[in-house]
Image 1: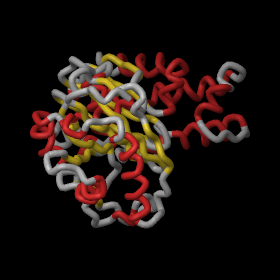
Image 2 (image 1 turned 180 degrees about the horizontal axis):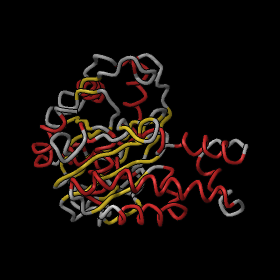
Image 3 (image 1 turned 90 degrees about the vertical axis):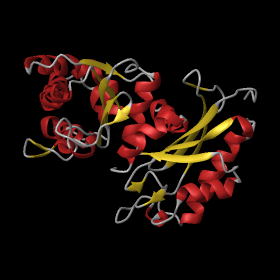
Length: 314
């Protein structure tokens, strides 16, 4: 990688079983070509092993950087987490539980030997995805937006002027919709991979491992296409009240299920319009890069100052 870039940050995405890190050009709002490093992580390992994998990955990215050009490192990190102080609060779940109580910001900084003015900052993964889209994606230029990720779970975030809105009458608590009542359960039951696989099995008597496998059958079996149409109608009717209440200019969708938009998008948009919702819909082109760009935004001092009140509530 060319080390002549100035005004750069490292963006990091912590997944359930991997870490991805890139260098971001803060002036051009883009990932620098050739900077991406990915590593597998055992999320049930001891804290020292997890932190070692993370820092080894970051060292590989740092090799191509003149340290005095680096603003710092931003992490898109699942919670619970103290995002302002950088302390892991994950407890009672099987992923990264051994990091509980550790000041990850200080641990990373110490292990990398970063200068004191090189910051290590954190934001939750759903918000990072949304911020990345608002900073460098299809939501750029919109005052208010909602972002959702459709995959193994149902993630969401509401942004106003690029800052997550996590309280108040316009949004559900923490900007999260996955736990809200829907149908005979909660939204996460209906807008995630398991709904598709269960519905597919019920309708056809066959099993499928994921949405991609189900989507491949949509052109051959009208019953399967109807599953996607049902999903699209449900999604639009569920989201419409929140999009209207927040007055969102655009809805950005990411996650594996969004790749099948051609099979359910028409129904989603029809359901939105039926509810009187005029919000524009768009599929993320940044995809996984959105969270990396969003986490790098944490090293923009103006953004950091503005986002801290929201991070303190997450």
